[in-house]
Length: 125
Image 1 (cartoon, one colour):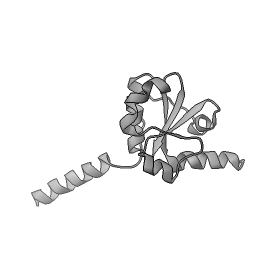
Image 2: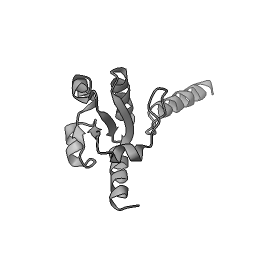
Image 3: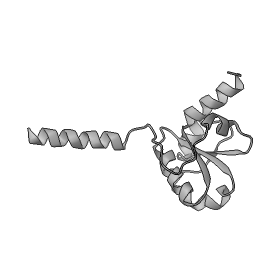
Image 4: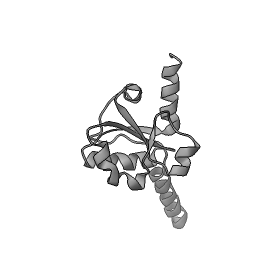
């Protein structure tokens, strides 16, 4: 019985830690992501690997895989950056790196979310 409870607790913790939904973190800008995504001065950064990026991404997005974010800080400083991936997990990690390096970054969660915002704006909704 105790083993079952421990296993259940561990499983629950694992699911919580790997959940797709991103969480608000203190220090991240509180802004309307729709306005940010559609602003003329934003840089959209897809942090997935190149093969995933090439399979589909948001309009105008550049590909900087998560593993290369730290090496690209210089090119992102001074810009308004929206990061995203498949489900938001890598985007959260990219946000932490960018924030530690004083980059104005916003969490777009997933490329489908960012694309949907673009499509909604383009259709005038």
